[in-house]
Structure formats: C-alpha cells, structure tokens
Length: 454
Image (cartoon, rainbow, N blue to C red):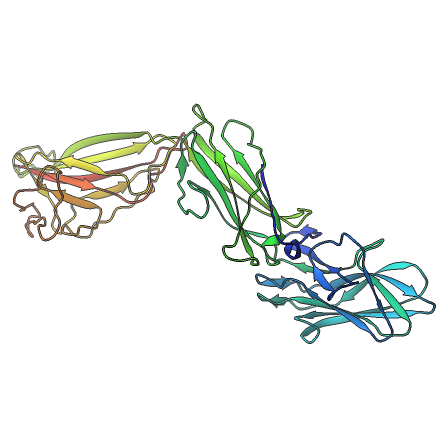
C-alpha cells in the first residue's frame, strides 16, 4: 500500500467527520475563530482549541465557509443539522435561533430553527433546518450559518468544550478518482504503456478531485498486486497539486514503483487505488487498473493457397501460368508483453521475375483479418497511391517505397500491377498496440495478398 499524505497551507488544511451510506455522506463544517481576531468562519478542520463568543440580547454572529466550493456540490433533500455547544451566563432563559444560507447572510436562506433553554452549564443542542429540495451549488458558492440571541440575557456559543459545534449536510458530492494510470515517466509525462518489462520503473498516478478543494483529499493508497506474491506495501510522500493553483478541486498523486528483476512473474498485474477524504478516511473512492509484465513472444507463419487458375477456375485450382496465389501471413503473440503502438511492420519481397502483384479491381491489395482473440490492431487502406494509409509498395526490393509523383499503377480492368519496374515488395503497418496474452488466450491477426503466376 503506497500512502500519500497531502501538504498544504494552514487555511487550506481541512479535516472532517464522515459517515457514509450508499452514495451519500454526512459532511461537517466546524465553527472556528469565535474569539477572533478577525471574523469567525466555517472550516473543514476539526477545532483543536476552544474559543467562544458571547451574544448579548438581539445580537448575532455570521460564519461563512472559509474556502468556497471548488467543484459543483449538491445538498440532498434531507434535513440540515447544526449542533451548537451553548452556555447561559446569568439567570433566566435564553432563546437561540440558527439560520443557514447559501452565499452569505443576504443570500438564499435554507431555513431557521430555534431553541429556548435555561439552567447553568454547557448544553449541546441540535438545530434542524427542514430541507425538502435538492440544493445544487456551483463553483465559488459557499455556506453560511447565522446564530442569533433573539431574547434577553447573554448566550455563550462555544466551538468545542464537552462537544463540538458544527454544520452538517447530507450530500452525494464526495471525493472522486477522475483518472488513474501506470506511466513510463514521472508527471506530467502522458506516455503510458499497456505492458512493462522486469526491472523497469513505472509511475503509479491518480488524479483525484473533491468539491471542498484538493486539500480535503487526505491521502491516496496504492496497492500493487502481482500474480504470484502478496501485495507490495510501502509508503511514499508526494502530492502534485493542480498546476499553477493554490486552490482548486484537483490534485495528482504519484509514486515510482520498480518492478522486480528477472525472474519477476510475467502475467497480468493490477493496482488498487483508494482515495481518502478527510482525516478519518471513512469516505473513499476506489478503482483498479490492470497492466501486463513481460515481453512479447511473436510467432509468424506464412502460407500460400492457389485460389484461381484459367483451366480449373476456383475449383481445385493449380499453380500454373496466369493462376492467382494468395499469401497469408499470420502473427500470434503468446507473450504477456504488448507490442508498442504502431510498431508492427510486415515486409514481404515478391518473386518479381515469376509473378505480378494483384491490386484487385476495384483495388483491395491487402486483406486484414483479426484473430479469434482480438489483436487490438486496426488496418486502413485508402488508395494504392496514398502514402499515408497502412500499406505501401516498392519496386526496388524494399529499399524505398513509392511516393508521389512516382506511384504504383494498375490495370483498371484486370487489377494487375502495371508499374515500371513492377512491384516487388510490400510493407504492411497496422496501427495500434498488439495485445499481449493472458497466459491462455493468445491474440493474433493475419494479412493476405495475391499475386499472379507468370
């Protein structure tokens, strides 16, 4: 397990208490700085020291969320709770009212609740704001709590002593792993392969977001699983915040991991990613990603079949003058390693003194067939003169390939090569990464082309 601990500026370090059921969670914003200096505020950090404010009759205190939402945030259509630690100073009863707003005390009110109490000593009281509608907040919106003493006497509001004062909402806007990968180089290099070889160093990377800001992402755990051994467990400390920003919803977590040397187990490995929200880690998001360790093992097989002759036509065709012979090249990958993207290249030299290449009429010089276990490759043919599709032609034994203005030519009726000198080599370059085997199912593909026996 590779655990990342975030580092950030003091006002951006948030902690939270969470309970989670299904896709919803309870999120708390704590009352802070009640004694000053400066304005009191709501923060994700649990208070570590007590402070309080005294509200005289008719007075109030307004607490805005210290860092606005950095991504859209939804409050569920359920009650909003405010828990306050209260204390009466002097005799008689006290009446305290709580109101919750979106975007300040002049913004949208979500409702009020009030409580009348008497008796000495501290009392922890729950105020319930009835909320029957889904509240959709956008980036830079924030929550506000106003606490009022609406009767006589003085009320002391404490942030934490024998209890904790906080606003609590129910939401499905929680931490999210936006993307993960196993990369070949450190962040921000985007190069990612589908397989790696023993002893190579890979970079495990997770991009994670949170509506309360990236500082609310307390850690990301990575567990590396190989096919034959217990998970790899170690700790690293690194976090890459959103580039060029001290606030924002997103952060990138990454660590290097060196694959064991030979004989490291070839096969399908996986990495489990768990992103933890807040100090308690009770709300998480998780995902996994697989990759292969090993090298490709390619088997190439070429076969020929006579598909037409001028005497027997297609039935029991013989390789006689003016017959057509189809060649098929089949490639199978029985290794766990993937072949790098766009690097498969098949070249075949034709017996130019005894054959003529068949382009087809209409042109269809190479047929690509994926195997029963998909290769992951694709093939494009546009035109015999197109230098950018996946088949090219040579008339100098593969030393060079014809490009405009010197291009291959074909008889439009028969489909046979009329290039001078004639085509004597073809190159086939299907695109994509050739899939690796899983140890049982071996990916394959084949290409076919035709010549005339002269």
